[in-house]
Image 1 (tube, rainbow, N blue to C red):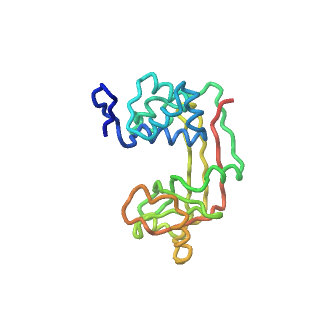
Image 2: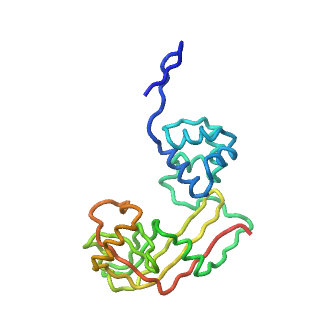
Image 3: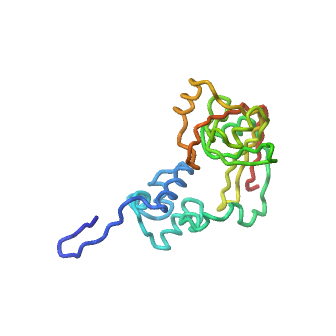
Amino acid sequence: MEETTAGEAPIEVPAGRGDLGRRVSARREELGITRAELAERCGAAASYVAYVEERAAAPSMGMLVGLADGLGTTVAELTGGMTDTPPGRGTAMRDAELTGLSEAECRRLLSTHGIGRIGFSGPEGPAVFPVNYVIVGNEIAFRTAAHSRLAGAHGTEVAFEVDHIDDAMREGWSVLAVGEVSGVTDERRISHLHAVARSLPWAGGPRTHWMSMAPTRVTGRRVHSG
């Protein structure tokens, strides 16, 4: 796509949303701030923040630093430079504290959907698998393949863990839920789970077998600045 101005040569205008735009938008929404608020933080116009989020923009290093500061993250995180590295590589805060979370706070952090990890012990030994999950009432539900190792955990006690790490602030939290997992066979429940699921499993493939667990114990911890 091109735009022209009288007396000027055509200017190539980037089209389509890029990875940078997706990361900026996701981080901004995670913080719960508007484009105007982010623009004020980084000294830019709200229209430019919109441009970065919606188009394949190529900001200068100075603007990237401003966006990263405004979003409480790093340039490497925004540009995908840390994609293949585990979180938590930053230096710990000198006044860091580890505190327990109430069950109500744990359930709030579990929220309605996201990615968590299921840990269980099967015939082949201990295993942990990441899954996309959704909260329905008091239950944690997720999809897997019908004949997977995870589906074979039906009727056993499992541990479900969710966490969030903020590398820029060296803060984070984790929630652990324990309970018996079972396959969902009731057609009405399955239809309801399909209706409330926010997205398909990221892993793709025929992961249509719903499983759920009603936690009997929910605990959590938070690392934060003292």
